[in-house]
Amino acid sequence: MAVEGQDYTRVNGSAPSDTGTGPVTVEAFFWYSDSHSFELQPVLDAWRSGQGERVALRWLPADFDRKPGSRQNFKPQQRLHFALEALGAVGFHERAFSAIHRGRTYLNTDGAILAWAAEQGLDPAAFAAAFASPEVDAGARRADALLQAYGIQGVPALVVDGRFLTGPGLVRETSPGFPGTLAVLDGLVAEVLSGRAAGAHPVGRRAGF
Image (tube, rainbow, N blue to C red; front, side, top):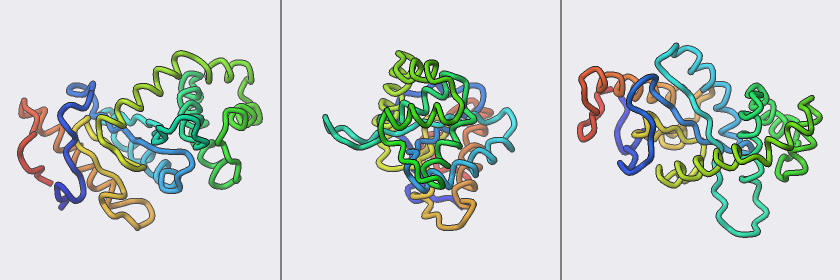
């Protein structure tokens, strides 16, 4: 049984959220260069495929770098993700992970990312335009705001319905396939749906799973 405060926590009530109706949203915060995010990505995508219409999975690239002039690669990789989304090239999400962790292609600068996109067969001009677009700016700002509001300190991190935070780190997951993390996700999704069916959010009581 999942334990609140150990396997998952409740998100601060001030966190922005567009949840409440429709599919239960699972927001997956990640970093392309993070090995645990790389390992979780196919597992989580497969889990989502088995959920039918009851769950919507949203991948959100994290940027923990707040130092002006820093040479960290969070922001370029964040823009990479949203540029792929803008072009409808979400299938390249897994390719980006693979390029870094299997191909040792370090996508840590704008130039390296633009070159990689061209090598993948994406139209260079279209990708460059998307990469620099206001749409990508807006996506990055929203991801940054959610990261701050949810108080996320590391990745991968999973937020369910804008209210529950979990992930391999909280679950202390070491098994291949992340069965413990998926079990907690299943329980949280069921808890949200149960609360909706009852006509009220279950905030303030222990989750019954």
